[in-house]
Length: 357
Image (cartoon, rainbow, N blue to C red):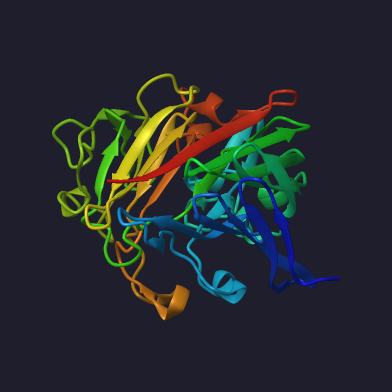
């Protein structure tokens, strides 16, 4: 069997490369290049985006995501870098929920709470990959079956994540799932972004189309929505992330909060705009989810050495994770956001558009 295969399309190309082995199985890395010269790399382990090269205002390409060159880095030191997170992203209070009159107990891997699908979530398993035909671009579909009882969740779930890199400089992510029994699903994409390619993201300018957020006690939302106006959480107009970073509080300090995206919670609509003044790179995000978790890389402390031997320090990357609200299953007003029944497919769309100014 060849170790590398390359498939060309009218708009770009896709190469399959070896990326190591886990549990006796091969892991592959798919390198997708569009007609504009952007290159996206995705691993079958964790459905992880390992790299995305984006041009600046002068056309210079730089990798704008945090990650590792080798599979071993993701196995040993990865705070969900670039992964598809599931079955339920973010936190579930006290690692438990009730469904159909039964209490389900989950791993308290963020004690005492459950985080990002548990001890072995979807970010730590192999996915099956197939290349797709995509108009004006290249695309890859990754699928897996999550069996009933995996990490304590009920129901068999068939999940899919599609990554499409378009010639219009968009990274489109389509996450979907189906179940054969009532369960909860809240998939999220967990890339750490740095539009400068390195250094702190404190100077990045951020807009969040969110007039409200869901404060926690301290990390898990309580079910209350509060206005951002007059607080450190007001990103309704562009401001440097570092301006109110200390005022956001936390231990370690920084943002790790869910924001209520303005508009119809199930409609595809603007979520965020991130800009790096130095390079001119701009990323906008649209999605069809009710919330977005803004995380400013607070727990990065220099101990993780990433791509090209670079240590990742506090606030060297940020996440913008569109999602149903954290702990929604335990909040009656939010519960429907994450409840999935047979015959009612889950669909989560994210569109990242890259420009330069």
